[in-house]
Length: 210
Image (cartoon, rainbow, N blue to C red; front, side, top):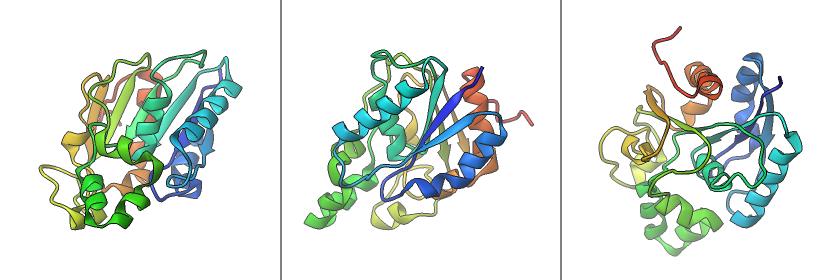
């Protein structure tokens, strides 16, 4: 049976940034699609409607979501209820599911900061209290502290340069793991691609598995 993956990029990115991850997941046996959206200009309602429509087009085969940063937040938001969507799991890559301190600091620097965060500002800043949706969700966080967020604000504890590991530990996740890479590096890591495929098939990570 074919298993589909829809990849979602993060804030200020476009679909081409997902190219290497796309290829690696295809090599792992999945049918992979890139979901390109205007992360600042598009409304959240419009993004979610397009995403759900794309998922429904692949039914009844399983459709997994892999979202980087803001993309992971949008994936969870789209799947709070099944609403006739096909089955599948979600992997988030460095997504601040509990809300982003860096985004809050960026918005507070000057009025233009709020504009640059776009229509998904509140989702980025506040995140979720917990996850109780119908899909199993796995998180891969980074711990290499190199990135723009670390220059804009103080990030407490382990972080990937943009998102603190603690901001990724949302109650209700099926599994969570940390890899030694930066926020952007999550998209280019072979280990992250391997772990993503592993969770989508089995519902858990095993970082020690070769």
